[in-house]
Image (cartoon, rainbow, N blue to C red):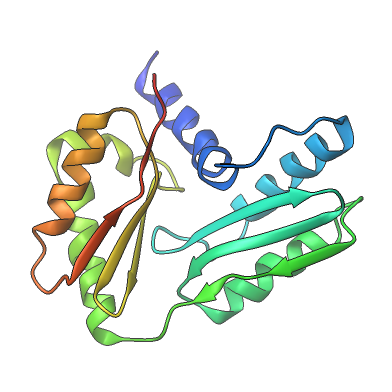
Length: 178
C-alpha cells in the first residue's frame, strides 16, 4: 500500500476506531447509516483539530457526544451538525470544553512538535485530520486516536513524557493491528 493510501486509511480509521471503541456493531441498516453520517459530519467540522477529540455513541435514535475540545463553539457546532441527520431524534452533548490556558497552549505546541516531528511518527502528520489527538487539561495530557503499531504507540507516549512541564500522560492510543 502506498503512502497516500496509508494516510487515507488512517484518516478513515481515526474517528471510526476511537469513536466506536467499546460500541457494539450496529445490527440494523438504519443505525449503521446513522453512524456513518455522524462520523462524516464530525470529520467535516471546520475547527476540529489535533487538540480536540470527539467521540460518539449511537443508541437507537440518540447520539451521545463525548470527548474534549478547545473551543466552546466546536461543542455546539458538533451537536448542531448532527441534529439534521434523518433518524436522529436526540443529541446528548457531553463534550468537555477545555479551560483556556496559555500554559496548556504552550504544552500543546511542544507536544505537537515532539510527537509529529519525531522521525518514526512523521508519517502520521500527513493529511488534514491527524490520527494522534493531543488533549491537554491543566498540564495533564491524554493521547487519543490510532496508530499502526505498538512501537508507534510507545514512541508517542515517550515523546509526550519528555516534554517539560507535563504533569502526567495517559496514552489511550489504539493500535489498528495492521
